[in-house]
Length: 293
Image (tube, rainbow, N blue to C red; front, side, top):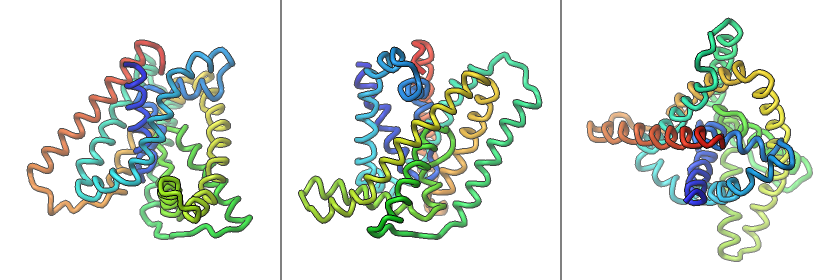
């Protein structure tokens, strides 16, 4: 049963990775797997061995979620953008209580308040930059494009470790979001249909992107783990600020025709919000009780 639940958690996280505005780090935290992921990457050998069994199905779910997004979730976002977005917003908000438990009972001082406000300002700045960004770039076969893909992977993976910051939004700001998502789809279709040309085109972008992603996850996770160990309250307030501000990014990045949504559509959106919050809150609380997050 635990294996199945961890696959579902990974599946939801994998889909979130690909949605502009949704932070993969927020989803990992909302699913109650944040501490386990940091431990696997930057913990001792014994700690990594203890977390690995739970994270293998989580990783399988992430891969499945990324592939499904390329086909199914795009359609849902196209037909039901508000309701689909509300599910993920609810899940982001549902992960905040697990962070709040770290700072509960600690008196707020100037340092903690500044940490929270700086995080909110970072999110606001990202929103402004990504909202005004209309650049679309491509990666043609060359050494420079290879290095750019490595850098993009590093940046995207780093945001997976930092809750609240959307890697997809950063890809939009840099102008490579559609190039990366298109390459993932090309590689998946090529592997499924044994088309060498599609496999080569997708692999040229995805392989260096994956190399950068591994480096980004390892380096940034070590920094975050050290901050959580040395300054847990200050770091937690910053993470709460990032997560609290990220729902605005989701709504700004999803195209919604507000005039076409009737009272039933808004009612269903509220149900989706509550449902997403409940699922994430349950996962976070359950893992908090078992000390896995």
